Length: 100
Image (cartoon, rainbow, N blue to C red):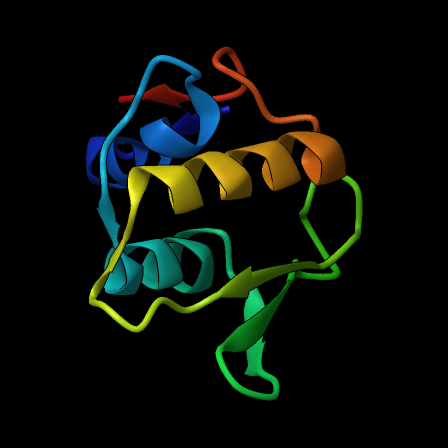
């Protein structure tokens, strides 16, 4: 799936196993809300439920949970954990997206 480079740059650490860097929570959040058109609901504490759109979504119609860090950035370990979740829920991997 093609996507604008600005979004691909944010998404890359969540799909590429060799990408080990921190990602700003706000960038992660905006990627899913603005580009993927997810509905995001805040739960108790730091939990956020990310639900994909009902139309036009080509992956599994499942929601996933992510914990907003106390800091402004997701650590590389938190990014890795979200990467595992996205692979399990949607099957995303290094070849799922390209930046154009």
